[in-house]
Length: 373
Ligand SMILES: [Zn+2]
Image 1 (cartoon, protein in one colour):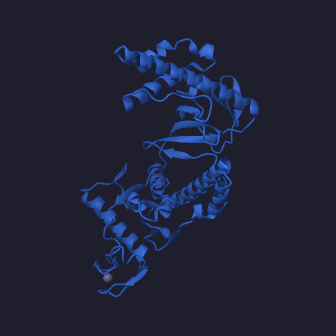
Image 2 (cartoon, protein in one colour):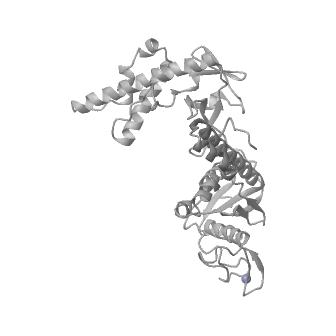
Image 3 (cartoon, protein in one colour):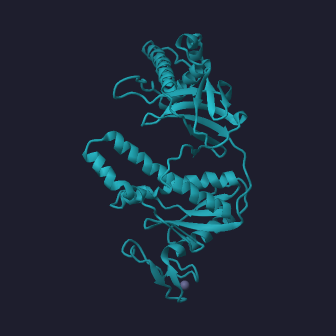
Protein backbone atom coordinates (compact mmCIF):
# COMPACT_ATOMS: atom_id res chain seq x y z
CA UNK A 1 0.00 0.00 0.00
CA UNK A 2 2.87 2.34 0.60
CA UNK A 3 3.50 2.63 -3.09
CA UNK A 4 3.34 6.03 -4.67
CA UNK A 5 0.77 6.22 -7.39
CA UNK A 6 2.38 7.50 -10.50
CA UNK A 7 -0.89 8.25 -12.17
CA UNK A 8 -4.26 9.37 -11.04
CA UNK A 9 -7.38 10.80 -12.46
CA UNK A 10 -8.91 13.99 -11.20
CA UNK A 11 -12.53 14.75 -11.55
CA UNK A 12 -13.47 17.73 -13.71
CA UNK A 13 -16.80 17.74 -15.49
CA UNK A 14 -18.53 14.43 -15.89
CA UNK A 15 -16.48 13.06 -18.68
CA UNK A 16 -13.16 14.86 -18.89
CA UNK A 17 -10.49 13.34 -16.70
CA UNK A 18 -6.88 14.31 -16.21
CA UNK A 19 -4.45 11.43 -16.52
CA UNK A 20 -1.18 12.04 -14.87
CA UNK A 21 2.05 10.21 -15.71
CA UNK A 22 5.27 10.67 -13.88
CA UNK A 23 8.35 11.17 -16.04
CA UNK A 24 11.43 9.08 -15.51
CA UNK A 25 14.43 11.13 -14.71
CA UNK A 26 17.35 11.28 -17.12
CA UNK A 27 19.03 14.53 -16.20
CA UNK A 28 19.44 15.93 -19.71
CA UNK A 29 15.72 15.68 -20.45
CA UNK A 30 14.86 17.36 -17.17
CA UNK A 31 17.27 20.14 -18.00
CA UNK A 32 15.51 20.67 -21.31
CA UNK A 33 12.11 20.86 -19.58
CA UNK A 34 13.51 23.34 -17.07
CA UNK A 35 14.75 25.46 -19.95
CA UNK A 36 11.36 25.39 -21.63
CA UNK A 37 9.67 26.24 -18.35
CA UNK A 38 11.82 29.38 -18.12
CA UNK A 39 10.84 30.30 -21.67
CA UNK A 40 7.18 29.77 -20.75
CA UNK A 41 7.66 32.14 -17.80
CA UNK A 42 9.14 34.65 -20.22
CA UNK A 43 6.07 34.47 -22.47
CA UNK A 44 3.76 34.69 -19.46
CA UNK A 45 5.53 37.75 -18.10
CA UNK A 46 5.51 39.32 -21.57
CA UNK A 47 1.72 38.93 -21.51
CA UNK A 48 1.79 40.51 -18.04
CA UNK A 49 3.75 43.50 -19.32
CA UNK A 50 1.38 43.94 -22.24
CA UNK A 51 -1.49 43.87 -19.81
CA UNK A 52 0.11 46.48 -17.55
CA UNK A 53 0.73 48.75 -20.52
CA UNK A 54 -2.92 48.48 -21.49
CA UNK A 55 -4.01 49.26 -17.94
CA UNK A 56 -1.62 52.21 -17.62
CA UNK A 57 -2.74 53.81 -20.84
CA UNK A 58 -6.35 52.77 -20.28
CA UNK A 59 -6.48 50.88 -23.47
CA UNK A 60 -8.59 47.84 -24.19
CA UNK A 61 -7.25 44.75 -22.45
CA UNK A 62 -5.60 42.36 -24.88
CA UNK A 63 -7.59 39.22 -25.60
CA UNK A 64 -6.04 35.80 -25.85
CA UNK A 65 -5.94 36.21 -29.62
CA UNK A 66 -4.28 39.64 -29.36
CA UNK A 67 -1.60 38.07 -27.21
CA UNK A 68 -1.14 35.22 -29.65
CA UNK A 69 -0.68 37.74 -32.46
CA UNK A 70 1.83 39.71 -30.42
CA UNK A 71 3.89 36.63 -29.61
CA UNK A 72 3.73 35.37 -33.18
CA UNK A 73 7.12 34.05 -34.26
CA UNK A 74 8.40 34.05 -30.70
CA UNK A 75 8.28 30.30 -30.43
CA UNK A 76 11.23 29.80 -32.76
CA UNK A 77 13.39 32.26 -30.91
CA UNK A 78 12.49 30.81 -27.53
CA UNK A 79 12.69 27.26 -28.86
CA UNK A 80 9.22 26.48 -27.66
CA UNK A 81 6.45 24.61 -29.41
CA UNK A 82 4.19 27.18 -31.11
CA UNK A 83 1.30 25.38 -29.50
CA UNK A 84 2.83 26.04 -26.09
CA UNK A 85 3.12 29.78 -26.71
CA UNK A 86 -0.51 29.91 -27.76
CA UNK A 87 -1.63 27.88 -24.77
CA UNK A 88 0.24 30.23 -22.42
CA UNK A 89 -1.40 33.30 -24.01
CA UNK A 90 -4.86 31.78 -23.73
CA UNK A 91 -4.30 30.64 -20.16
CA UNK A 92 -3.04 34.09 -19.24
CA UNK A 93 -6.13 35.77 -20.67
CA UNK A 94 -8.38 33.21 -18.99
CA UNK A 95 -6.95 33.62 -15.51
CA UNK A 96 -6.84 37.39 -15.89
CA UNK A 97 -10.52 37.39 -16.81
CA UNK A 98 -11.37 35.30 -13.77
CA UNK A 99 -9.53 37.59 -11.35
CA UNK A 100 -10.14 40.82 -13.29
CA UNK A 101 -6.49 41.72 -12.78
CA UNK A 102 -3.04 40.85 -14.02
CA UNK A 103 -2.09 37.37 -12.78
CA UNK A 104 1.10 37.02 -10.78
CA UNK A 105 4.45 37.07 -12.48
CA UNK A 106 6.05 33.73 -13.04
CA UNK A 107 9.44 33.54 -11.38
CA UNK A 108 12.20 31.38 -12.84
CA UNK A 109 14.72 31.49 -10.01
CA UNK A 110 15.13 31.85 -6.29
CA UNK A 111 13.07 30.61 -3.37
CA UNK A 112 9.79 31.89 -4.83
CA UNK A 113 10.35 30.04 -8.07
CA UNK A 114 7.15 29.08 -9.88
CA UNK A 115 6.71 25.36 -10.40
CA UNK A 116 7.62 24.39 -13.93
CA UNK A 117 4.74 24.37 -16.36
CA UNK A 118 4.73 23.78 -20.12
CA UNK A 119 1.23 23.59 -21.55
CA UNK A 120 0.08 22.51 -24.98
CA UNK A 121 -3.35 22.85 -26.50
CA UNK A 122 -3.90 19.74 -28.50
CA UNK A 123 -2.67 16.20 -28.84
CA UNK A 124 -0.93 17.11 -32.12
CA UNK A 125 1.89 18.63 -30.04
CA UNK A 126 2.93 15.24 -28.67
CA UNK A 127 3.42 11.70 -29.89
CA UNK A 128 3.40 8.55 -27.81
CA UNK A 129 5.95 5.86 -28.57
CA UNK A 130 5.77 2.84 -26.32
CA UNK A 131 6.44 4.08 -22.81
CA UNK A 132 7.76 7.44 -23.97
CA UNK A 133 6.30 10.73 -25.07
CA UNK A 134 7.89 12.74 -27.87
CA UNK A 135 7.63 16.48 -27.51
CA UNK A 136 9.54 18.97 -29.61
CA UNK A 137 11.64 16.17 -31.12
CA UNK A 138 12.72 14.90 -27.77
CA UNK A 139 11.80 11.65 -26.00
CA UNK A 140 10.79 11.57 -22.36
CA UNK A 141 10.21 8.21 -20.75
CA UNK A 142 7.13 7.78 -18.59
CA UNK A 143 5.90 5.46 -15.89
CA UNK A 144 3.09 4.47 -18.16
CA UNK A 145 0.53 3.20 -15.76
CA UNK A 146 -2.39 3.22 -18.15
CA UNK A 147 -3.01 3.33 -21.86
CA UNK A 148 -4.41 6.46 -23.41
CA UNK A 149 -5.95 7.08 -26.80
CA UNK A 150 -4.31 10.20 -28.22
CA UNK A 151 -7.38 10.98 -30.28
CA UNK A 152 -9.28 11.51 -27.04
CA UNK A 153 -6.72 13.93 -25.61
CA UNK A 154 -7.99 17.49 -25.58
CA UNK A 155 -4.99 19.29 -24.16
CA UNK A 156 -2.24 18.77 -21.64
CA UNK A 157 0.92 19.98 -20.00
CA UNK A 158 4.25 19.04 -18.55
CA UNK A 159 4.21 20.19 -14.97
CA UNK A 160 6.34 20.02 -11.88
CA UNK A 161 5.16 19.24 -8.37
CA UNK A 162 6.45 20.75 -5.14
CA UNK A 163 9.16 18.12 -5.02
CA UNK A 164 10.45 19.12 -8.46
CA UNK A 165 9.30 15.97 -10.17
CA UNK A 166 7.95 16.29 -13.66
CA UNK A 167 4.64 14.90 -14.81
CA UNK A 168 2.81 14.67 -18.08
CA UNK A 169 -0.83 15.67 -17.60
CA UNK A 170 -3.33 14.78 -20.28
CA UNK A 171 -6.92 15.91 -20.29
CA UNK A 172 -8.82 13.07 -21.79
CA UNK A 173 -12.41 12.74 -22.82
CA UNK A 174 -13.53 9.33 -21.66
CA UNK A 175 -16.55 7.33 -22.65
CA UNK A 176 -18.98 6.00 -20.11
CA UNK A 177 -18.82 2.36 -19.28
CA UNK A 178 -21.82 0.50 -18.04
CA UNK A 179 -20.22 -2.02 -15.79
CA UNK A 180 -21.53 -0.99 -12.41
CA UNK A 181 -23.09 -3.59 -10.15
CA UNK A 182 -26.76 -4.10 -9.38
CA UNK A 183 -26.97 -3.33 -5.65
CA UNK A 184 -27.87 -0.23 -3.72
CA UNK A 185 -25.86 1.09 -0.83
CA UNK A 186 -26.16 3.87 1.74
CA UNK A 187 -22.95 5.21 3.22
CA UNK A 188 -22.47 6.94 6.53
CA UNK A 189 -19.18 8.78 6.78
CA UNK A 190 -17.64 8.93 10.21
CA UNK A 191 -14.55 9.69 12.22
CA UNK A 192 -13.95 6.48 14.07
CA UNK A 193 -14.80 4.28 11.15
CA UNK A 194 -14.24 5.98 7.81
CA UNK A 195 -17.49 4.65 6.44
CA UNK A 196 -20.31 2.34 7.43
CA UNK A 197 -22.42 0.76 4.71
CA UNK A 198 -26.09 -0.10 4.89
CA UNK A 199 -25.03 -3.67 4.20
CA UNK A 200 -23.51 -3.77 7.66
CA UNK A 201 -19.92 -3.59 6.48
CA UNK A 202 -17.55 -1.05 7.97
CA UNK A 203 -14.38 0.46 6.58
CA UNK A 204 -11.92 1.37 9.28
CA UNK A 205 -10.17 4.69 9.00
CA UNK A 206 -6.63 3.78 7.99
CA UNK A 207 -5.05 6.79 9.76
CA UNK A 208 -2.30 7.23 7.25
CA UNK A 209 -1.13 10.41 8.90
CA UNK A 210 -0.78 8.82 12.31
CA UNK A 211 1.43 6.13 10.83
CA UNK A 212 3.93 8.72 9.66
CA UNK A 213 3.40 11.24 12.46
CA UNK A 214 6.50 10.30 14.40
CA UNK A 215 8.80 10.36 11.39
CA UNK A 216 7.22 13.64 10.33
CA UNK A 217 7.78 15.24 13.70
CA UNK A 218 11.38 14.10 13.71
CA UNK A 219 11.99 15.54 10.26
CA UNK A 220 10.39 18.84 11.23
CA UNK A 221 12.42 19.12 14.41
CA UNK A 222 15.59 18.52 12.44
CA UNK A 223 14.50 21.20 9.97
CA UNK A 224 14.59 18.74 7.08
CA UNK A 225 12.00 20.35 4.86
CA UNK A 226 12.63 18.13 1.87
CA UNK A 227 12.10 15.00 3.97
CA UNK A 228 8.93 16.41 5.56
CA UNK A 229 7.54 17.25 2.14
CA UNK A 230 8.29 13.75 0.93
CA UNK A 231 6.50 12.24 3.93
CA UNK A 232 3.47 14.46 3.41
CA UNK A 233 3.34 13.39 -0.21
CA UNK A 234 3.54 9.75 0.84
CA UNK A 235 0.62 10.17 3.25
CA UNK A 236 -1.45 11.79 0.52
CA UNK A 237 -0.58 9.01 -1.91
CA UNK A 238 -1.51 6.27 0.52
CA UNK A 239 -4.81 7.94 1.24
CA UNK A 240 -5.68 8.39 -2.41
CA UNK A 241 -4.70 4.85 -3.27
CA UNK A 242 -6.85 3.51 -0.46
CA UNK A 243 -9.86 5.62 -1.46
CA UNK A 244 -9.54 4.66 -5.12
CA UNK A 245 -9.75 1.00 -4.19
CA UNK A 246 -12.74 1.40 -1.88
CA UNK A 247 -14.64 3.54 -4.38
CA UNK A 248 -13.97 1.25 -7.29
CA UNK A 249 -15.25 -1.73 -5.36
CA UNK A 250 -18.41 0.15 -4.35
CA UNK A 251 -19.14 1.08 -7.95
CA UNK A 252 -18.48 -2.46 -9.17
CA UNK A 253 -21.04 -3.79 -6.70
CA UNK A 254 -23.76 -1.14 -6.87
CA UNK A 255 -25.82 0.78 -9.35
CA UNK A 256 -27.00 3.34 -6.81
CA UNK A 257 -24.76 4.92 -4.21
CA UNK A 258 -26.12 7.28 -1.58
CA UNK A 259 -23.82 9.22 0.71
CA UNK A 260 -24.67 11.40 3.70
CA UNK A 261 -23.97 15.08 3.14
CA UNK A 262 -21.98 15.39 6.37
CA UNK A 263 -20.12 18.64 6.43
CA UNK A 264 -16.46 18.28 7.25
CA UNK A 265 -15.76 22.02 7.42
CA UNK A 266 -18.07 22.29 10.45
CA UNK A 267 -16.26 19.56 12.34
CA UNK A 268 -12.82 20.59 11.19
CA UNK A 269 -12.96 23.63 13.42
CA UNK A 270 -13.23 21.51 16.55
CA UNK A 271 -10.44 19.47 18.08
CA UNK A 272 -11.26 16.58 15.83
CA UNK A 273 -9.85 18.60 12.97
CA UNK A 274 -6.81 16.52 12.24
CA UNK A 275 -8.77 13.33 12.23
CA UNK A 276 -11.40 14.82 9.92
CA UNK A 277 -8.85 16.07 7.48
CA UNK A 278 -7.13 12.74 7.58
CA UNK A 279 -10.36 10.96 6.83
CA UNK A 280 -10.61 12.95 3.62
CA UNK A 281 -14.38 12.83 3.29
CA UNK A 282 -14.62 15.31 0.51
CA UNK A 283 -11.98 13.44 -1.45
CA UNK A 284 -13.88 10.24 -0.83
CA UNK A 285 -17.07 11.75 -2.16
CA UNK A 286 -15.48 13.28 -5.20
CA UNK A 287 -13.78 9.98 -6.14
CA UNK A 288 -17.02 8.13 -5.60
CA UNK A 289 -18.91 10.63 -7.69
CA UNK A 290 -16.74 10.53 -10.75
CA UNK A 291 -16.29 6.79 -10.59
CA UNK A 292 -20.06 6.35 -10.33
CA UNK A 293 -20.71 8.53 -13.35
CA UNK A 294 -17.96 6.88 -15.28
CA UNK A 295 -19.25 3.37 -14.66
CA UNK A 296 -22.88 4.20 -15.19
CA UNK A 297 -24.04 4.19 -11.58
CA UNK A 298 -26.10 6.87 -9.86
CA UNK A 299 -24.55 8.97 -7.12
CA UNK A 300 -26.72 10.82 -4.62
CA UNK A 301 -25.99 12.94 -1.59
CA UNK A 302 -28.77 12.67 0.95
CA UNK A 303 -29.61 14.82 3.93
CA UNK A 304 -27.95 13.34 6.96
CA UNK A 305 -29.83 15.11 9.74
CA UNK A 306 -31.58 12.78 12.20
CA UNK A 307 -30.17 9.68 10.55
CA UNK A 308 -28.47 8.63 13.77
CA UNK A 309 -31.58 9.19 15.87
CA UNK A 310 -34.20 7.39 13.84
CA UNK A 311 -34.59 3.64 14.15
CA UNK A 312 -34.22 2.14 10.71
CA UNK A 313 -36.55 -0.69 11.68
CA UNK A 314 -39.66 1.09 12.92
CA UNK A 315 -38.99 4.78 12.30
CA UNK A 316 -39.21 5.86 15.93
CA UNK A 317 -36.90 8.66 17.06
CA UNK A 318 -35.28 6.61 19.77
CA UNK A 319 -31.55 6.74 19.05
CA UNK A 320 -28.66 8.70 20.53
CA UNK A 321 -28.94 12.46 20.24
CA UNK A 322 -26.50 15.27 19.68
CA UNK A 323 -22.97 15.74 20.86
CA UNK A 324 -23.51 14.28 24.33
CA UNK A 325 -24.27 10.87 22.91
CA UNK A 326 -21.47 10.91 20.39
CA UNK A 327 -19.71 8.08 22.22
CA UNK A 328 -22.69 5.75 21.96
CA UNK A 329 -21.86 3.06 19.41
CA UNK A 330 -24.69 0.56 19.93
CA UNK A 331 -28.22 1.15 21.11
CA UNK A 332 -31.53 -0.64 21.48
CA UNK A 333 -34.69 0.87 20.03
CA UNK A 334 -37.22 1.53 22.80
CA UNK A 335 -40.14 0.98 20.44
CA UNK A 336 -39.34 -2.21 18.59
CA UNK A 337 -36.44 -3.59 20.64
CA UNK A 338 -33.99 -4.03 17.78
CA UNK A 339 -30.30 -3.58 18.59
CA UNK A 340 -28.59 -1.14 16.26
CA UNK A 341 -25.05 -0.34 15.41
CA UNK A 342 -25.09 3.43 15.34
CA UNK A 343 -23.27 3.92 12.04
CA UNK A 344 -24.90 1.08 10.15
CA UNK A 345 -28.34 2.26 11.28
CA UNK A 346 -27.44 5.69 10.01
CA UNK A 347 -26.30 4.27 6.67
CA UNK A 348 -29.60 2.43 6.25
CA UNK A 349 -31.49 5.65 6.92
CA UNK A 350 -29.33 7.43 4.37
CA UNK A 351 -30.14 4.77 1.81
CA UNK A 352 -33.87 5.20 2.46
CA UNK A 353 -33.75 8.98 2.39
CA UNK A 354 -31.78 8.91 -0.84
CA UNK A 355 -34.37 6.66 -2.44
CA UNK A 356 -37.10 9.00 -1.29
CA UNK A 357 -35.27 12.00 -2.64
CA UNK A 358 -35.22 10.35 -6.04
CA UNK A 359 -38.90 9.45 -5.85
CA UNK A 360 -40.00 12.91 -4.81
CA UNK A 361 -37.55 14.73 -7.04
CA UNK A 362 -37.97 17.79 -4.87
CA UNK A 363 -34.60 18.44 -3.30
CA UNK A 364 -32.67 16.96 -6.17
CA UNK A 365 -29.14 16.41 -4.93
CA UNK A 366 -28.76 13.96 -7.77
CA UNK A 367 -25.79 13.83 -10.06
CA UNK A 368 -27.25 11.20 -12.26
CA UNK A 369 -27.12 10.97 -15.98
CA UNK A 370 -29.97 8.50 -16.09
CA UNK A 371 -32.74 8.20 -13.54
CA UNK A 372 -31.89 4.60 -12.82
CA UNK A 373 -32.51 4.58 -9.13
ZN1 LIG B 1 -37.36 0.65 16.33
